[in-house]
Amino acid sequence: MAKLQLGWSYEIKDLGEAKFILGMRIDRNTDGDITLSQQAYCERLLNRFNMTFCSPTTTPLSPGIVLSSEDYPTTPDEENEMKKIPFHEALGSLMWLQVATRPDLTFSVNMLARFAHNLGIAH
Image (cartoon, rainbow, N blue to C red; front, side, top):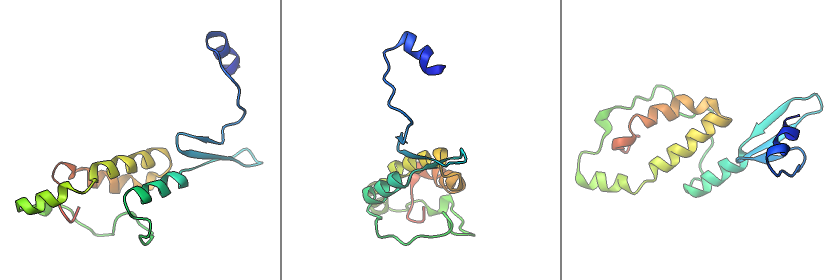
């Protein structure tokens, strides 16, 4: 019905069931369940941020880690070094993951976002 109504106002082309959209793979099971996966997006992120060979972990942020403003850079050299790190780009990419398919990243991403304005080594 929605396709029909859209066809009245717009020129549309039915390409069948979606398999991949907005960086998400869509899998449909025989029982009607739909599964979304962003594995390809994650792999591109790992490549982009030179983390292809990083070790996997079971938790996005180490348990008990405490980040604070005391971790901010204290010297101009530290500030310049931190400016070379694409922290904001990585954080934005992780935010897309948390919103779309990885809600388990939410706490970690939000904690790191608190320090995005003055990034330190610990962050």
